Length: 371
Image 1 (cartoon, rainbow, N blue to C red):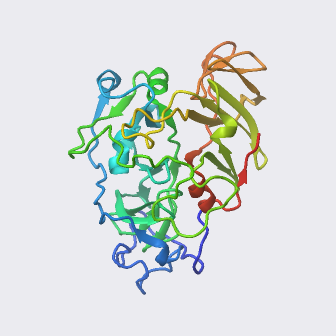
Image 2: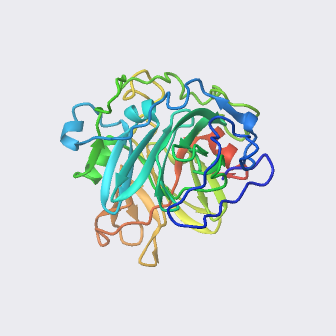
């Protein structure tokens, strides 16, 4: 996803299991002569203000039940949803915007759940590299106004947006992504009544529920610390849903796929059919000073529109999604909740809810969907 702006990146080759290469810290000097050439121009790695770990990652997350979380979360608030091997957890954005990274283990798999408020995107990765479990922290640096992480084992620098090591001894390595859509709290409760929720008991004192980026969700204002021009096919902070499949990329503007109570958009990404579902009821956490009071931007799910080899097409009926072939009813998580296909699930397609400037920077050849 990331376009190289320097020489060809160093290719990471591991010769043995359970070993990571050693070398200088890219936190100290991304262009150290003993390190591979960075994938991006090191001059474009700018300080976001705080030092490394100045925005502290959560390394020992605690969780609570849905019943307990009800006391502090409004139905419309956004949560990041991670489902691994049947274990489902929600990470409220009201907490994530203060920490940006949670090092966790879900369904037996070590993961890093990450959220970048400056590009309005949630991405989760497996955090095992060559058999070594690593942890991630915030580097204090930004690339294209987006979070740059670092791993604490080698102090290589990584992009939040596509999980690639862009500087350090691991330059060129990529993390395996884990789907982590943003859903409204009410939709999470309905779909996952036994799910767990990240607790406000993080070990840090923060004003959870308050938005430190008040007013940032304005599509015509410029992102913080962004250098250079932005693709002018859309407003700089237009909300889009980015989908990449086999090298083909499409950005679906919310203005095209949303509106009313629900929307079902049939499309193709490259040669692959997808259905993009949009459901009203999730508010922007980045608009108002209170994370629960921003405008309604809705929740999105992207799926392969087929079950057991049978192609499906979708329409909406109020706030419900109906397939035309069997008249089964589906929810925003891609689960058939009634009808002939009840209990079936659509295969999720990884997607990013983000701002146009971020998607178009990392996917400069993207198509901009027009309904």
